[in-house]
Image (cartoon, rainbow, N blue to C red; front, side, top):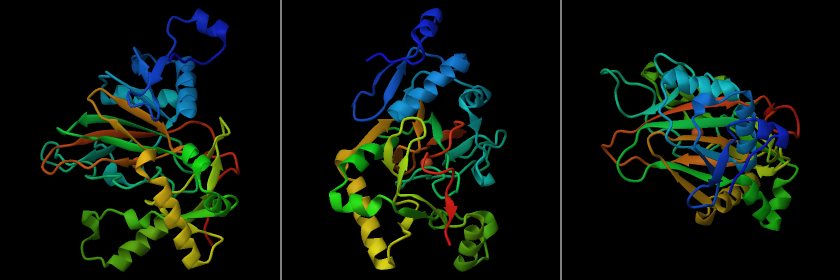
Length: 310
Ligand SMILES: [Fe+2]
């Protein structure tokens, strides 16, 4: 499959047009062929954003980038994010969120074992993160990659009873249950830690089904990682319904596994997929660099932003 965007005249005038084909196992996303992301200009950046919005997951191969080149690629696509917790930052580049179980120069860097539950990045903030890119830096032997679920497809396949409960409701999201203890937490009680982190990340709501601002796709926007209920339902009913939603979402036939190779960049749309990191075999080093990107569009078209949960 060849794919490109922009008007025909503009494409004809340009030497490089992105070409892509479905990822090898074909269930989600495309891989871009023969493109060096260091050559991203304003036009190709627009093409890449359109490709991510259209295909949900885009994979680039063979990219050998310095950290500054990697950040420059993110900056060409939009506004790179600075993650709100500093313990995740690369020591020299706060834009880079480090997932690592390997010390650097004898020092702990970043956080190990991140994102091993189904989630969408920053779902627990009023303004979630539109796009995420990940570049593996050290790949353990064996199977390592990221799992994805297409939430537009899941929404379309929802059983009627669940669809009726999801449409028109708001889902409630919290980060605190996924908080990772830091050295500063020693001597604090679990209650204190939850209260402090809960104050930093107050509970929010978003529509349970969101409308994509660029494509109009309707996507179920809940995850077992961060969603704790549906605002309109009584507590027991809420827990029952979100449990049924999670079980339906996470069916094996909905999961796309994207393996990691050195030189890959995986870039996805958090509005349209949930993701989960694969497990690293015990004792194996694993390092990846993530950058969040704000793509200049509201997260969803239903309304400008999420709401604090009262
Ligand atoms: Fe994530």
